[in-house]
Amino acid sequence: MVCQLGINGFGRIGRLVFRAAMENPEVKVVAVNDPFMNIPYMQYLLKYDSVHGQFNGTIEVAESALIVNGQTIQVFSERNPCDIPWGKAGADYVCESTGVFTTGEKASGHIQGGAKKVVISAPPKDDTPMFVMGVNNKEYTSDLKVVSNASCTTNCLAPLAKIMNDNFGIVEGLMSTIHATTSTQLTVDGPSKGGKDWRGGRCAAANVIPSSTGAAKAVGKVIPSLNGKLTGMSFRVLP
Image 1 (cartoon, rainbow, N blue to C red):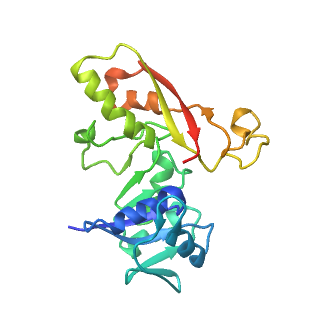
Image 2 (tube, rainbow, N blue to C red; image 1 turned 90 degrees about the vertical axis):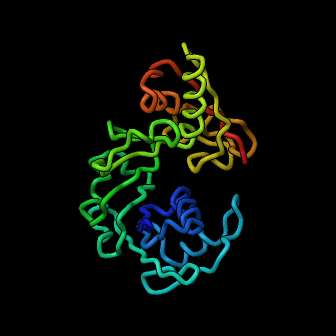
């Protein structure tokens, strides 16, 4: 059975989820919601990607919709998840990729809009169940309506930590991640957002910038036996 998918937030994660879904015959994107860009701009950002290249397919603009590879995908512009008509669009599953609605309570607004299940594309800010494929995904039960797929770093670290812990045991660990630059960084030296992370205000293209990461702690949530045993940091590097 094909998964009918809706995507909330057409930023970096949302667009990459869209691209991956279009290549998967078991997934059908039926709707996208983003209140911060119009449909022609969505088309432009989806078609041309600085890292992954040009979209392999056709993208056309229609009234309140994108037509991708001949398939009509409804486009909404709602700020509140409960106002997005996922049910009418036929979206049973929603990828919550705004980075804003990262608690079970906030993300459950999509359920009010007609979705059946929600996957948050970031670590949750509360006790929402978090799963990493190959690590603890077998603990998922069908009664869960809102779950988290953790972060990019957690998805890289947790499988390796599981193998090492299962075979040898981990007493204590220090990790580092070479992470791509993010949208919070600056193109020229200046004050960082919030003014607290001085190094974070350095030019992203000319520096390797250290940053904190919650991935080590997140591993403890998907592998409880490692809770409190890992720590680490991130180094942001130009791709």
